[in-house]
Length: 298
Image (cartoon, rainbow, N blue to C red; front, side, top):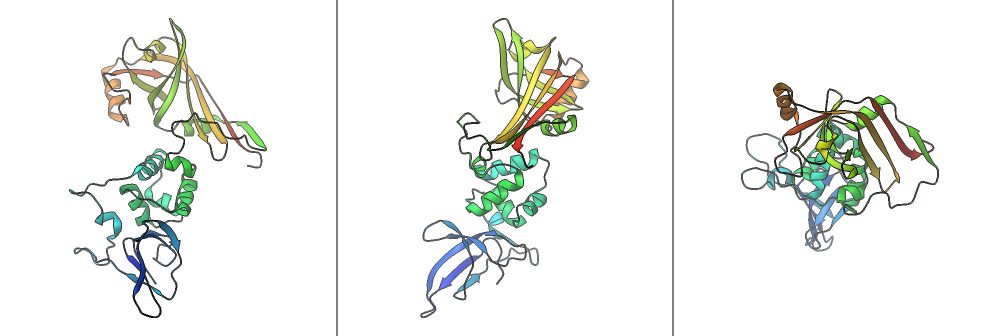
């Protein structure tokens, strides 16, 4: 028995031959299309892991003209008018984290032991993967299944229990640079007339330099001309572990037109706060430190 995404699994009565149950195959666990499958049942709309028995058969989807052996599946059949994708929350989180880590879709699918077509389906459509698929995908991305679901997004991190045998170790400079990644959201600590302030900012890492956009006369702009602290961290609530990286260095406003243009061209996103924020501030690291909490046996 072999299937592809979008095929229908039909379970028939061994006595009458009538359909007892049917559902769409939304997940493949083997690249050759052999069982088991993640099936979304038409009578309950639930997705379960299925090992088909002798009373089950596959009803294949039609192939699209223009490519012999091309798998159509749910990925191409369910795109919105105009051919654009319409990902759900899980798909957006998967794609964003995968791209943040610099992983290809094929490498992520391999790590998750998941068919490449199904990962494309998850990233491009409002899918509801099985718990098993979600756990494998979260493990492949080094995050929790709850994080992929967006659980606890409004709660402060770190409310879970501590590890039984935690290990706190320092990160070397190369590990710190790797965790800074190329962009994201970090926190800059500055001194203002009203006292110390910590502000989250969208940042870029370009040639080992931290850069963020702001507007004159704002709190982040107070960083200019002084040594500041810049921090990023990640917390895995499910595993009670995480890491943080701290950068200390002088901040300056970027005024050279060519450098401003270079930063703007290489920016991954505009500031989430919106508004006119065209003032680039750079932080040149003088000190780079980090720490990681993990189980002691790792």
